[in-house]
Image (tube, rainbow, N blue to C red; front, top):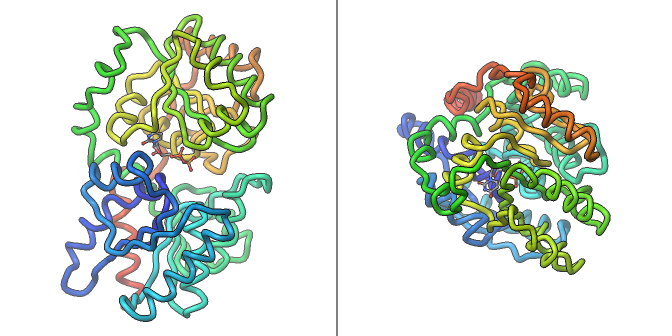
Length: 361
Ligand code: UDP
């Protein structure tokens, strides 16, 4: 399994456990590319989820192309000398996903994609290219929701390659439910029992310009009149706030609780304890749907449409008036209650490993 970024780590937690059951005929090794490398974006997840990388490629920070080139060189060398895999699994939609899929394909090793087929149809998102291109070279396509199946068929993939298995990110939530509920993050934040809104924002389209950050500041100003706003801040967002010298003015809002990126248990505890969520993340749309917590996604599109059609997620334009309308609906109890999408049941990893066993036979 090739993983490289925070959302990848969270999606693979159950693979070592499930593969262990088939120890006699199958084993799995985790390759960490080093795309996300520090304690807060990487190490803490491995520690909490009880997994560890078997190989570390140690790519250096750099442009996407430089990083992908390093991953491809490192992975090719690993797979041709130290560990000859029968199948490579890649996960999600980050640069490590595409680099891993291309390398295995060039080496004639079959590749499986966990979380295949998701499409935002928004070519301004770097992740969309990673998704589309990775799927083109993958042999086994594991989809989390029905839309994935339809997208892949339209792109010419064959039905035989596609397995609708559900969502391995939910497997992790289910497996660590007790630890999540025990997290002491609420005491640590000293919110004093006040209702709070959980916010994350890191997509280039929202945080890469001064105007985008100003809009965000106005929105936080608006929400924080009635709620505490807890905002674990992504490294990309804090870098932009510093670049535009806006960190101080954000921090002058006393109802805004900025934190560093949080560990998994703490963040999940905040999801279940929040009044609602405001985000532009991919994964958080799914976690909030599973928890049935209202989620306002400030993007024009989503690659995860079942969170909107079945779940508690809504796509909302970044306009105060429309956001306020949604908040009004949440407060008056008129917001949709949501259903959990099919196969988001904690057993998706099992389904994937079963399919892989059949394929390798
Ligand atoms: N997450 C976390 N701590 C944080 C923020 C997010 O553990 O401070 C988790 C979140 O619950 C989800 C994943 O990280 O499982 C999503 O990562 P991110 O939003 O960076 O990526 P995306 O899903 O947008 O690709």
